[in-house]
Amino acid sequence: MRIVSGIQPTGNLHLGNYLGAIRNWVRMQDDLEPGSECLFFLADLHAISMPHSPAELRRATLEMVAALVACGIDPNRSVLFNQAQVPAHAELQWLLNGTARMGWLNRMTQFKDKSGKNREGASVALFTYPVLQAADVLLYQATHVPVGEDQKQHLELARDIAQKFNNDFCSEDAPVFTLPEAFIPPAAARIMSLRDGTKKMSKSDPSEMSRIELADDADTIMKKIKKAKTDPEPLPSEMAGLEGRPEALNLVSIYAVLTDEKPEAVLARFAGQGFGVFKPALGEVLVETLSPISQRFRELVEDREALDAILAKGALRAREIGIPTLDATYNALGLVRAR
Ligand code: TYM
Image (tube, rainbow, N blue to C red; front, top):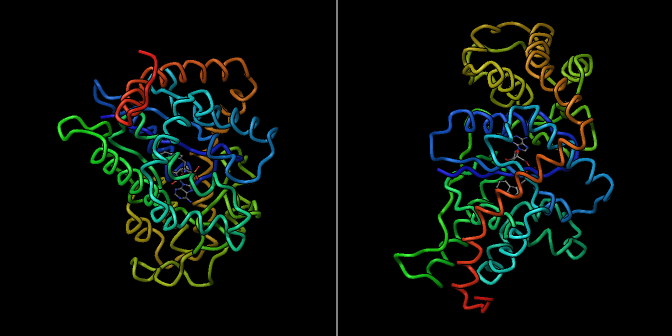
């Protein structure tokens, strides 16, 4: 089993990333069978597909390494690195650009969402972004890719690219690429904004009140939960009672994921209570989970040398794992290189 996943270093890690992805990464790392391996990386090459500030990106990349380690990713057990230190990602993307079809990329919803009305002004990188994402996982022969629901379409594209490449350029008994499986934790698939229960919690939302960040202190967390949008109804005793109440559903889901319970069990406990009771309880559970993480984060983020060393070590190992697949890809395409 080879587990591979990435996260963009665009600003602070939030609860959606943590519950939707990172917590799951940590669990997969901790439950790993002998002979299996986890690779987790910062998708810094993806981050330049949108307008960005170089100084911000540099800071956010280092902060994200600190945050991942604070969340429990252990650089001695998992390969932790950034794409920019492993040129094979960009190389493989170019090689796969020959296989990816315009029609496939035209169907990607993320490009439509992120480019908005300004399609002509969007970067080429934003359009070809999913090919780089395919390269990220195919380079390592990933079998499992833990992600949130929003990345499912990109993973399907990676499978399509792998399949077409294997069909077009490989003999049946010697495919170059493994078809990766998206692994989406059902409970945490989509953590929504605290201001609008129909939008996912996101780093790019201009309102900080819409998300809980992992670096938030206890007071900030309590304040954000207190101000989270809700409705005047008390909590129902059954899930059906949350229908048409996306904000209430989101808060109950967050509580359930944090305490590892089913949302039904949370409702059974809080049925008939208003948000005046539920919100402080949720805030407490959040603070309990996040405060050890943010404390460790604040210590780590000060140690630039240690962060550089983590990335250097991870990149070395990532290159080692990726090179045979990159070589096989060049070879399958008939590109002549030094022998
Ligand atoms: P990114 O950086 O937007 O998000 C990182 C991970 O967090 C998940 N996530 C969420 N899950 C639940 N609820 C939310 N509100 C929420 N917001 C984010 C995402 O699904 C993701 O798993 N393109 C990717 C990064 C990437 C990647 C890869 C992932 C690049 N290459 C290869 C996997 C494999 C992205 O922008 O994720």
